[in-house]
Image: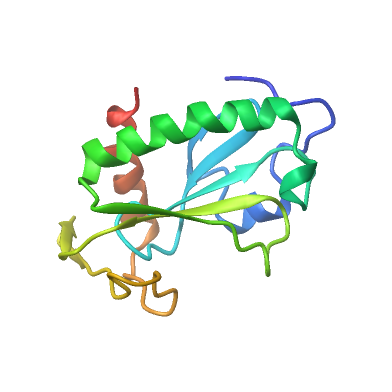
Amino acid sequence: MISSPPDAPIFNATMRKFGAPQTIIQQYQYWTLMLRPVQLTLGSLVLAAREPAQEFSKLSEASFTELHKITAQLESALAKAFNYDKLNYLMLMMVDPDVHFHIIPRYAKAKYFNGLEFIDFGWPGAPDFHRPTETDARTNQQIIDYILPCWA
């Protein structure tokens, strides 16, 4: 495990809201990657900064450097796991002010996992945050377990 940057909380409020530590897929020095507990589409993730910042520009240069490495890894892993058609990175930070991205794989057709049908209701437009696929903690853990072996 990589250590936290100096003075960074282990889990900020945004990470806790998105289920940390149970939803963590990968922990990096400056970022924490989690499965989004509410799956908008199959494999929806949250990438949260570990630095205490509420403005993107306030992150350290090291954080931005690590972000490049992380995006390459997660794009490859999600492509292997679910063969998405597009990938959206959304930095909204309206309700949860800590720096974070919602990473939403996009699909032109329905995907199936663990007996559930995942439909991208917003395709080909913006993701529809009002129509997620209902999953439980067990299914979410199975999604995490499915993604992990795809990690480079």
